[in-house]
Amino acid sequence: MASLPESLHETVPAGSHELAGRISELGEWFHNLNLHGVPTAPHHFLGDFPNIKWRQIAHAIPEDLTGATVLDVGCNGGFYSIEMKKRGAKRVLGIDVDDRYLKQARFATETLGFEIELQKCSVYETDCIPGQFDYVFFMGVFYHLRYPLFALDNLLKKVGDTLVFQTMVRGSGEVQDWEDDYPFWNTQIFEQRNFPAMYFIEKSYSHDPTNWWIPNRAAVESMLRSSGLEIADHPEPETWICRPTNVKHEGRFVVERELDGTL
Image (cartoon, rainbow, N blue to C red; front, side, top):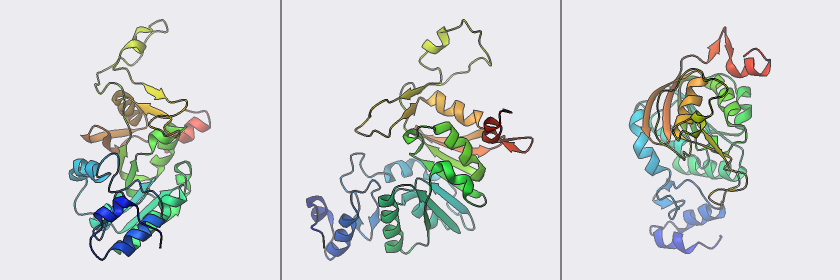
């Protein structure tokens, strides 16, 4: 058995050291899960994450999901997949490209006794997954992508009813109405702090070289609407609950029309 980090020795209930050892062997966890009283990331730099965020958005998701299907994109250690199973979802599929996270999620779901499907799959390949899902969770992935809007538009093919979207947000948190069009010589709008904007990180942010594009709030909401989504709720500053009201035009998704030059 791998030796336990001091942090786990401090938090593990009596008789749970074997479980803590298994957790440690799976590497560093980003999701702090409670596995029968043993935390997987007890000293997370964000606190009890993602539970601290879930407490702010849980009320925006029906408590009874009996019969529902769920796709968890970038499932990481499986926190949101597990929460959906707790609410009775019939089928939950978690996808990620990181083998370490998938191993952690598999261990967590098996330890807790939840039947959750886990698959290695990129967000850019979600159109290869058969069918649609009642709920699609797209949490903490958007800003890690070099091609974020393409990923979002492609993912919309899988959203049957609700998209739960979360991203890191920086810059202005204010929004305002803008004109539908502006003349070419109007450059002043781009100097307004509330104008929709995405900040590009060339090297690294928060010691993470995969933090590529970080939007302000106006940019998030503009992109969601431009993809044909209706914002139904905004339960906390980084999360939006959306419905696919206008994602197709003449039976075709926006990403399909973009790729063949008919948008």
